[in-house]
Length: 218
Image: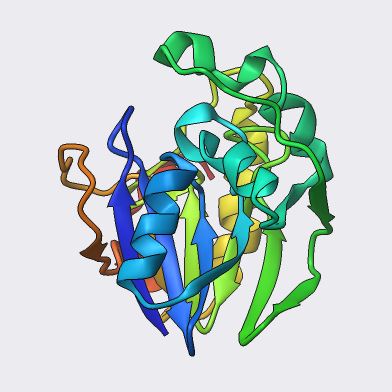
C-alpha cells in the first residue's frame, strides 16, 4: 500500500491517495477533482472510491466532481446534511461547494470492500456529528478527530466536546498501540500546492495515549 497526499487549497488540509495494485482510494478530497485525477495518473492508477471523514469544505471540495465522474463517494449518513448544507463552512472559506449527489452511506463498525482495499469504518462524532475515521491495513485516517498531540475543534456547527472525548477515548484509543495515524492536518504546516508528495504517519495510537492533552479531560 502506497500512501501519498496533496495539500489542499484552504487550510493546509491533507488529501490522501492510497494506491494498491493500480487502484486508488481518496481520503478527504480537499482539492479539485481535476487535480485528483491528474495525481492518479502520476500514480499509474484509477480512483475507485472516495471516503469523507467529515463534510467540511476543506476536506470535501472535490467530492461533487468525483461523484459526477462516476466515482462513488462514501460517508456516514449523519454527515450528509452538513456536507450539502451551509454548515460545510464553504462560505467562510471563500469556496464554492457544489452539491454531491449519489452518495454511498456507511455504518459504524462495518468493513467495506473496495477492489483490493478493506476499510473498517469507525464513527467518531465530535468535530462534527457524522464524523468518521477509517482503518486500512493497520493505518488510521483520522480526519479532524485526532491530531498529533492534539484533537479536533468542537465549536463548529454539530460539534460536541463530550462526543469527541468519547470518540477518542473509547474508540480510537482502543486500537492497538502500533496503529499509525494519518491526520487531516499535519503537525507542520505545508503551503498548498499541486505536487503529489509521499505521506508519512503523523503519530501512533500508542504515542497519543501517552501524550495527547485530551487525557486531561478524561
